[in-house]
Amino acid sequence: MKNPSTSVSIPIPALSEVVLKTGNFDHLKNWYVKALAIEPFFTRPRPEEVSWTGAQQIAFFKLAGVYPYQQVLGIFEVDGTLNAPHTDPGLHHLQLGHGSFDELFDRYDGLKQANILPSETWNHGVSTSFYYHDPDGNLAEMNCVNFATEAEFFGYFETDAYKSNVSGISIDAEEYISRYRSGTPREDLVKIPS
Image (cartoon, rainbow, N blue to C red; front, top):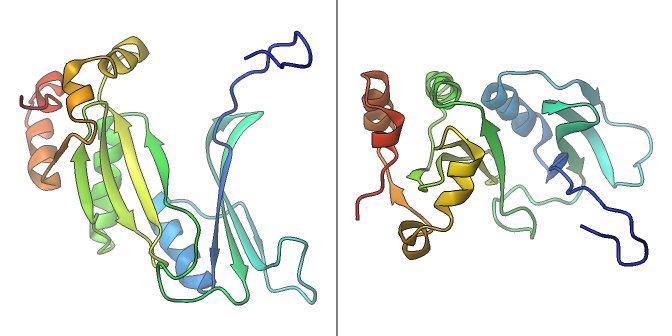
């Protein structure tokens, strides 16, 4: 993209940080420790004075990305945030991409062992997504693209199948994962019936 005030090209930005506000800091932080299978790289206990962000306790998780394009999930404890899900305006959902079906399905297995199950599971055509509600009611989409190449991925957006059904189809996670692990080729697994 060209900056209108100069002739300099500006690179497309990458998702680098998503911050959630909560009145239930420890419960939310611990949920993401389980969901991501990592500890925060930075935590701050409740300070004497509130920072410019209005945040009390803070946690930051390092996700994927190669410097300088890192991705961070932050959790801020903000006094006055209601503890009831969906009562404050804010985040619709965040998407946490996985590099392969194996990664996505292994994460599903680990979360299931921790009694964390998705509220919805979808084959969107372009991707497969498992949607989880965290303790504050935020929607965390655990996702993997359905195509081996970027060209195939972007090409699917141009198909009549996608244009007529952008949502895709609801799937049964256990059955979908079982079919994949028993040898169903990815190309067959991700097809959306006409």
